[in-house]
Image (cartoon, rainbow over the protein chains, first blue to last red):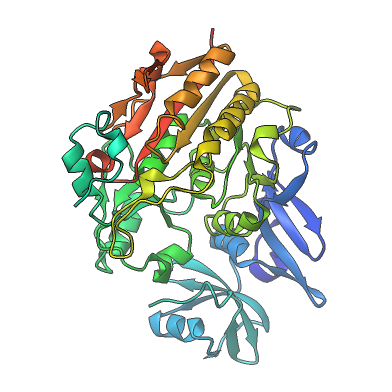
Length: 133
Length: 301
């Protein structure tokens, strides 16, 4: 996160990460967790990362939460580009950023992640959520 | 046209206006998610899209009427978790509980997560919420709502509410229990007749057991809200009265800034505890929202 987005580890101070299968879940640290640990838990916090092949992909919701603190690999898009991505089409761009995940921002709102490969950005935001009429 | 809920004619003030309100569609209210955006910024953003928000009260700066809001799921602001569409009266239960940041809270019947996320917002995403949802098939929508709203202080469990483990005590508890849902009924083109939910007669017994368990899970200075979206006194005042007769509990005032009526003094020739008047009943023709009941409860002394 630090190398790609400039998000230092200190951003996650006060949070704990729980691993379950291929996902990591973020939960605010609290003295009450010792009591909660005695319960049969069905879900914890917010999904923050998911293993995709060799990589750890940050989740849309985690990026929405912390993306405003990022200092690198942020791509600002306009309305036409937003509609294009939401339709599932790629964006063709010329950017001085290495291939990999980029943070998509629209009018100052952090949307989620895109995947930049050889001048093409594909939205990584779940299609069933990312649609605007 | 035949009146609906005729059995409540004597307890619902201005019964004809109440009937008239049931012929109107449910109004659209929304709650601004202050964890992600300030209310005035959302107001400006939605105004630019032709959606004009009307604040419901000076007391609640995140609760709005949104009469122009037709398809909220199609808005960018919805996707970003900036707001949640939610019945005004159901928001009042969380406002009345008013949990402090950093506290320990149990939401006994949490799905679909509107109230849970509201409580998390009031706690500023700190402390810990146990979001209990007895029905496994409702965990997905609970998780989705909490995720969209950016809630990171919540752990989900799946116990039957009436047997939630007594291993710990909570600062705050919300017992928004399964009920007959009379308060959600509106006469639309598809429905002109209220059809009783199956198993309605068994509900009060379940509700009493949930409320007893909720009370037993409270810390010494803890507070709990018991709430339903029904008009039925058997599911409302009778249940709270049962608690007062079986536990050292007291009713606290709720003081919502929306027109409401006090808890009933009696029903079916049964007189309730005098403290029941501190509960609140909400009717659609007064509150312009879903019919609702709530009582705030603490340990006596």
